[in-house]
Length: 257
Ligand SMILES: [Zn+2]
Picture 1 (cartoon, protein in one colour):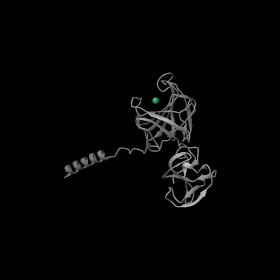
Picture 2 (cartoon, helix red, strand yellow; picture 1 turned 90 degrees about the vertical axis):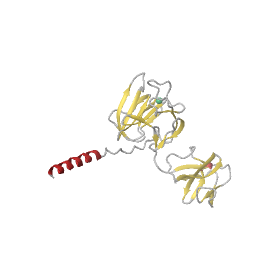
Picture 3 (tube, helix red, strand yellow; picture 1 turned 30 degrees about the horizontal axis):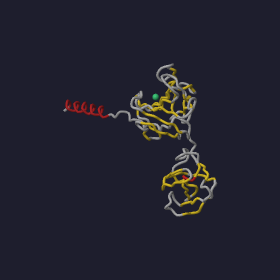
Picture 4 (cartoon, rainbow, N blue to C red; picture 1 turned 60 degrees about the vertical axis):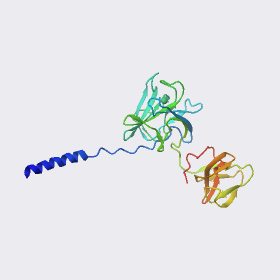
């Protein structure tokens, strides 16, 4: 009996050791586009890139444009590799094994050990290292291996070039716009679509406060064709195609309805 009892204990201990789970993987940080709120950048991925999942960002006259932290973390590398590789680059440790890289910078705005939050300017777009023209080389890594980039949880385009609009460190709130119909009053609807009943009109030139935006029926107006509707009051929606907001598409800091 005694011998068997010990034996069972040993087996139980072995099973227990085997079943001890690995430390659970932490949820990925919510990474944001590494540029200030509202800016649109062309991001390119390509299978011959090194590492493969890195994104190269460009926009017109981008030399010297600020680069911002894409998630909160601690700067753990501020390095100048000279005329090779990344050139001047910053690495941010976001915890849980996640890190981000910002390479070919023109200059640094942070130092090692510094805590950064969303939107913190860490440096400026440059063409240092093995770069043939100004751009930001950006990576997300998990435990040192590069991973497919996500912004706000959405996978970047692999492979190809796509425009990414930053909502990094946007102050959340309302937006503003100006109704532009070339004269005709714009119908206000009770919901986000032409199928909803009319609850009034706003005259051409009216400045409106946009509480939130949502998708509804597609409308062709002064600013092209769009399915975005702007809520300008309780139960009051107007077609964004007739509203000048300064943005093509959704306004970065305005919530979805
Ligand atoms: Zn690159």
